[in-house]
Structure formats: C-alpha cells, structure tokens
Image (cartoon, rainbow, N blue to C red; front, side):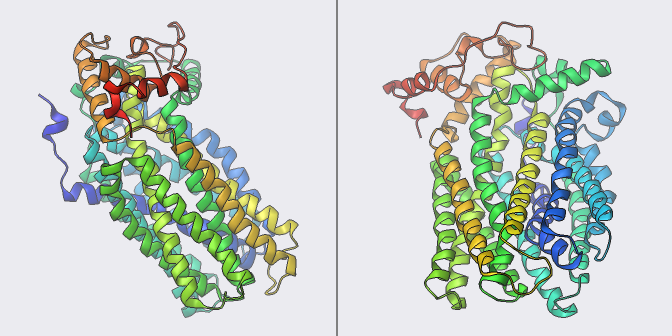
Length: 534
C-alpha cells in the first residue's frame, strides 16, 4: 500500500515546515542587507577587510555543505539516524546552536572575532539547512503538494524578510542611528524565532518510509565504506550532480535570480544613504515595502506555477524585478529621487518580482531528486541540498565581496557620512547594471526548462513502474511517456534506471552519451508528444 499517499499533509504540516525558513531566509536577509554596512559603520572594518570574512567563510563552506549533504543521505544507517531520522537529527541538534548568530552582531570587536563568529554560524547554518531542504521530497511525491510545501516555505520566508527589513530601522530609531545594539537585538530576535520554528519542523514533518525507496536507494544508504572510500564516494556524487541536465538548468535559474538579489541587497542601503542622501531608516522602510509585496507575490505564484509551469512564471517575475531595478537609476538621473511616493511604488514592484524569484527555484528543487531517481535509481536529496546550500551561500558572499571591492575601488571611505562624487555613480552602476546582467542570465536559461505539472505526472508514473520492477527498465512504455522521460532526464530511455555510470553505485557501468539539445527539441516537436511541451 502507498504510504506516501496515505499520510496526507495538512495545514499544520505545511506551516510548520514552511516556518523553518525563518533560519534560511530571515538570517540571510538580515545578513545580506545589513552585515556589510554593520562591519564598515560600527566595527571599524574597511570594505576589503569585511568582504575577506565572506571569502574565507566560502572556503570552509566549500567543504561543509557537500559533506553535510553526503552525511545526511547516509546517516540513516546509524543508531542516531534510526532513532531520530537521518535528516531530522540535525534539525534537532541545531535548535540550541542557532543562538551563535547573535554573536556576529556585537560592535567594536576585533577582525579575528568577526571572522570566527561568522565561520561558526556558517557551519551551524549548513548543518541545519541542508537536511531541512531535503524534507519536501521525503514527505511527498505529489507535484501539487510539493508546490504547496514550497509555497508555505517561501511565503513564511517573506514574513521573516519583512521582519529583517523593518526591525533594524525600528531599533535604530529607538537606540539611535549610531548604536550597534540595534543590530544585536535584531539578531537576538531572529535567534529566538529560529529555535522555536525548528522545534515545529522537528515535530510536524516526516521522512520517506523504507517501503517507498527503490532497492538501489536502500543499498546506497546502508553500504558500509572506509574513510577513503567515503571520501571518494563524496567526490563522485558531487560531480555527478552536474551531469543531470535539469539540475544544471535549475542552478542557472537559481543563480541568475538570487545573485541579482544579492547584488541589489548589498548595495541598496548605500544607494539610499549615499546617492539619495537619506537616513538608513528610509532604506529599512523601502526594504520592508519590498518584503511585504514579496509575501503577496509568493501567494500568487503557487497557483501560477501549477497553471502555466515554473519556467514561464519565472520569466514574468524576472522582467518585473529588472524593470524596477532600472527605474531606481532612472529616478535618480531624472532628478526625481526625492519623491518618496515614487520610491515606494518602484520598491513595491521590485517586491513582486523578488517574491516570485525567491519562490520558483525552491519549488523546482523539490522535483530534482525525482528526475535523478529516474536516472540513477537512487534518492539523493541530501547531496543536491548540499550543492544548493553551497551555491546559495557562495553566491551571496561573492556578490557582497564584489560590491565591497568595487566600492573601495570607487573611493568609498568607511565611516564617512559624505563620499566622493564617483562613489554615487559606482553605486548606481552596481545596483542597476549588476542586477540586470544576472537576471538576463536566468531568463535565457529558463527558456530551455521543461518540467511542469503534466510532465512531472508522467515521470512519477514511470518511476512507480521502475520501483515495482526492482530498478529494471519497464517494458510497457508509451511513445509519449518515453519522449517525456527522455526530455526531462536528457538521456536515452534504455540508459535510465541506473543503466549508466552516473553516481557512485553506477560508476563501473558503461558511460552513456546524453541526448543532444537538438534531439530533445526534435522529440518535443513530435505531434504525439505535444502534451509535454510548455
């Protein structure tokens, strides 16, 4: 009997799971919008010193994120994994550790202090977020249920972003604009909230039961390896993720949308303070306006992604955010930058675009492991989550680093209330040009992304046949199903279900040439297969 369909998620499950992204989105929003400003304003660090902290953290994270992904995929064979869950054990241990976030926000400390506290929290963040991100494909195979889980996650993430946007401004007004305690208390609020929501995640989510896993997936989890074999396996699994065509497309869309926001977030406070010559509280209010509209956008994106598919929905919101970003520059050069109502309107449109951009990639991510199972015969949610978390944090740090370096090269001097004229133009170039370049990259990549409700349903049906046959290529395949599965996997049908050398367990099997993009498009043009075309 199908236990994955018997255990239907309810409203409480959706909300409990979604609340967990107060850690992922809330702390990330506070960090990306304010930490560089905090370092250069209250901690005496130059932009280069501040951004070097992010750079060094990425070296550590380059090991921690994929290692955590590998660990959570195979932790189920241990006593602790069997008792608490291979994913949920790490969520449980992370509850008290989230308070390390507040240690980052103490003013007037040394460079070494800020480096160490940042590194510690990065490891804590990774140890929680990687297993958290695997839970949706663990709990359900259903396209609509996954879409609702992703919607709950991103909607509640936007609520945390609203708090991250408004709270520093409120506290700056209360404690005074030159008091770093505003940021410490903001971080403490988030630490407490994160501990509460992770408790909800632990008690109201579940993991995939053993009877819903293929034989290859169970073998992968239970296999006993030496340290050397484990490290080799980790390397093979990591590189194999990039051989999955739909994952590469997903990463491209993800990076395009999220790096665009990282660049925008890192420089937006400087835009308000040094270009518009307004107080930091104005930046907080404008970001709060964006965050509110981001929440509204996510609610609308859930039915939109089901109706027209993730990729077309993504393109709509990319255009919205791109036009609003360009408008900030137009507003300044037209001499109307002091019209606050126009700033609010542009920020509201930006929020609609940003909310959709935040939602679509994480909605898509929940389906990646389904395509991977068709290719490898395994469930490797953890390794994909590790790559995603590494990519997310590396992109954010890279964007903030680049902004800091360009700001310093433009003549920006930390701690000064007035900057040289060239600094304003540099800020505008970063805000508008940098954001638009990344959005264009994501838009172009999305043109080739084909997964939607109908194609995923066919993929699920074929996967169930494979599981029932014990990882053997099903012989009762229709032409339409063959074309759809080949399109999503990017490989010939006979080479799927582990009949290739992708992944550690399949490494000694013959290599298979992936289908060319032209072959995929030709299959899509088959009149019998029009159902699969977006």
